[in-house]
Amino acid sequence: GDLAAYVVYLSIRNLRASTRHLNERPGLILLSLIPIVKEGDAIIRGRIFYYYLVTIFKPVKQICL
Image (cartoon, rainbow, N blue to C red; front, side, top):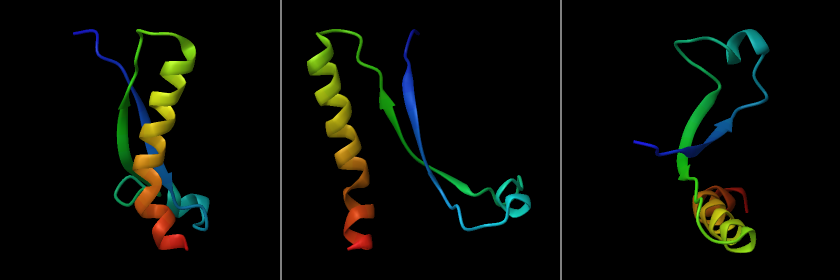
């Protein structure tokens, strides 16, 4: 199909680069795939994208507070 998505990763930046880039323990964690909305105007698409980001990062924000 013609499905497309934005990939959202969480990266751990306080690791050494040599450790962060290891294949067996990468410093990136896949958080989500956000579907790319192609229909509607730019404002609506932007609001949908923002809604997804807020939803994805809500638990992360709660941990950090």
